[in-house]
Length: 399
Ligand code: ADP
Ligand code: MG
Ligand code: MG
Ligand code: MG
Image (cartoon, rainbow, N blue to C red; front, top):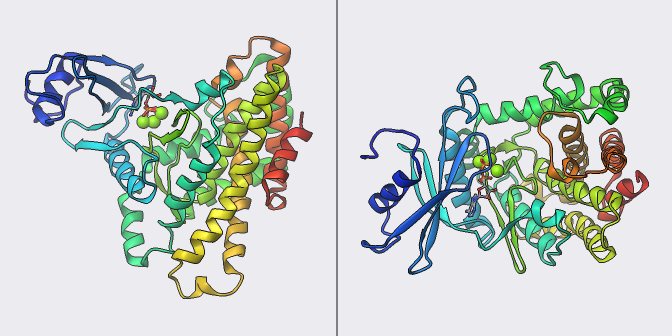
């Protein structure tokens, strides 16, 4: 095969590809390759040299969905993913995989193999504890968000980045799946857990005030080009190991509200808590989760203000009290997005394992209602939550 024209590779072709395009492995190494992806649009291959133990990952973007070629999506997203991983690696060293190669013909990103880590969602559903999680994720968010904003960046350079990461197609997915369908089901593809269907129809679709807030949030998501957000920072996009945290899969990255990332992290921790709560999980695990939810907000606040002091360049952003005013608006967005993510994963098309793997019907109903009730508070009273303790209280009061 030559790799000068795009085609979707199989595992054998990926081996030839890696030998041709990189000098990562020894020339005569005997490589094996398996497809390990779990998504609908991308192909993730792991290539390993059993002899030396060296390995890498090749992620190739498809131009149609794996289940139906009616659904088309530009492969530009793998360019975005590769470039954003590199930028995030500079801004938040050690918190993303190394990128070895980006190939815009084959639409591949060749990167560090993190197979010694576990996907956070899987680990959380097994009740595992990661002491550094909140610390690492808040460093990642403060560094990648504040340092790509107008507060810090030279404004023309920032606008050039805005242009690089317009990402219209993946933004549209979020506009539909997060900000529209969970409130309207206008595309008739929401999947509701039957025992919660009536409740959702009455309390989500049927709540005019909530829908009005969702409308406001949708247009804020589309127009507030505040920072280069990851855009898909749920617990399936985080790899963890005892002392290590790595963020992957930034193909949804674009210039949007900082709170979009922070709210996604908080919401996904709250899914894990709700699941733990209804299934009577180990107490030590539950208290670690609660601390992690609190720390995610509190450490974000602390590091944000410290980084602001060190890095702010804009003359007007230096006005006394402006840092706190700006942060408060990010926290308000965080609360709103926490609510939006919790609603869309239960009342929308895309589900989370935290909920769907609860086997007992009563427990599942309860876990979903905890999330949905908390979500409504976060959206309807978004300006009220400034500390981790306040965020956690909304969740616990909903249980
Ligand atoms: P998608 O965009 O299709 O969701 P992801 O980047 O999230 O793709 O990767 C899908 C899966 O592939 C991950 O859940 C993980 O199991 C595996 N994977 C992705 N990147 C790596 C990596 N760098 N090292 C090891 N496994 C990976
Ligand atoms: Mg993805
Ligand atoms: Mg993914
Ligand atoms: Mg992806």
